[in-house]
Length: 300
Image 1 (cartoon, rainbow, N blue to C red):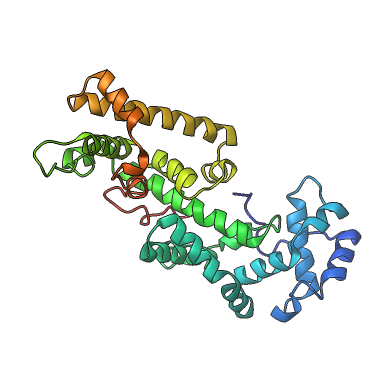
Image 2 (image 1 turned 180 degrees about the horizontal axis):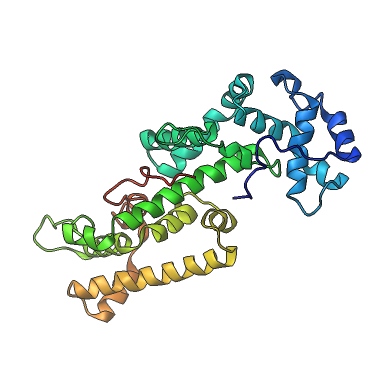
């Protein structure tokens, strides 16, 4: 997240170049439709320029998506006309993104609604606070920024739940490792590898499941996942390679623990076609801990 926005009431100096830029783009930035003056737009742009090394250079100013910056700031001020346009433009795409992250309609809607509260500037307890839209600086599309904030909200809640509910507690309660009982009294090769795979996936920490699900199921890029977890892209690449290698070893160990020899376990893995497996990989990777990761998000 970017540095905190400038405190309300702070008047920033406006250079001639910045005033000229805002004057040239005032008519098409949408501010007039919201009843917002050019002076206010100048202050918003000056705040963004103040936080960037390029300052008020023309190249930097031209890179700002001014209409989207104006809409975001107007919404943060509580401008009703701006909110109407914002919801008409972004509500559907935000719900779609939330559904994709959550994997279930009602929880996706809940995740999207939690973001709206953050954007409105209302805490979970109903108290007013600064809108998260104040952190959008017009660099890149507003829609892309909103998707990133939505995903980060999910990750933050995921991590909080991970801290609150340990894997050991779930193991003791028998929530994660109960393999399906064979129906014929003796599990065949497919049933054995299905059970071993399910157990190996279930044993992964929540964040590792999130990384694998994001990359292999949701098809997010390494760069996107790295941005969500605030690490370098190469770190995610190495992590995925390590997880894939570790999963194979984990599945093989489960097979050996289930009574196969090391050689038999290797041969079974090599001979199994993933299309013949009965494991719901999507469900296994996106399984929830005892408390859903959509509650108890941190107050930002």
